[in-house]
Image 1 (cartoon, rainbow, N blue to C red):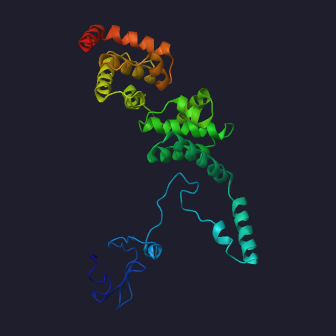
Image 2 (cartoon, one colour):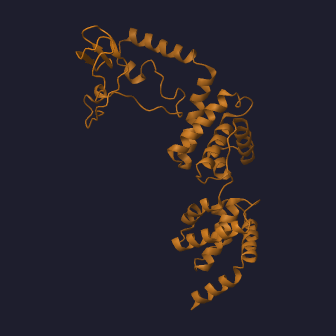
Image 3 (spheres, rainbow, N blue to C red):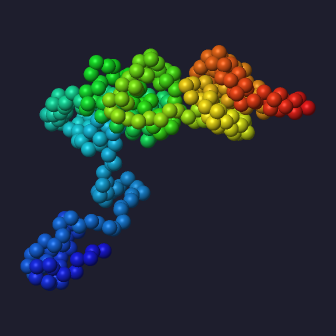
Length: 307
């Protein structure tokens, strides 16, 4: 649908619409009335492989998970090149080699780093939005020269941890350390440095975000999860969560809720799932019982379960 009905120069309504070039031209005086015409028609979709690429008007979307954001081109694919004759094949292989040689240091770094980022992200089963965010953070870090003097793997792990925190996807430093084979302290140090230099604001972790994952690993019922979240909400009102590790207090709340609903799990089991020590579970458990007056409720629930 187009709203241009007459030529602004001669007033003629004898217009020609060139859909291929996106232009509207006056046939009488030759004035180009519109040169950036938008096609409002339906996008082509293909349900078979044949002829689909020819009918598409757009390419793949831009993504930070590729070093050129998906906009670059590559000289031939190796599978296609082997189908050529030897003379042409050698020529294209030389072109591919020179294309790699003339790429910048940042591009070469991104090629390796983004491959590592995808590997770690796949290992941790992170959503696509987190992977995209982490790739953007790493790209900005490389462009600002923050990777120099640090291992590529530690910056990748730091970027992934920052992306997880921003999207409230609960992953601990221990899990990232296991996936990337980098020490937990090094990941934390790099994460703080990158977020500070790039001006990334990240809110403290909410212990409630970890409840679903821990409960799933411990095979606890939905009622137990709901009770654990309720305990955490009370703890936040009493300011018991400030200054304490979110995983430790989340695990302790889940441990208390499990005892209340008769789903007995040992402190060792809960500690292994949460990635904390039994001492941490024990200390947080005692704090929750004392400060929230849960001891009477716990005893009452346990008596009812015995009946």
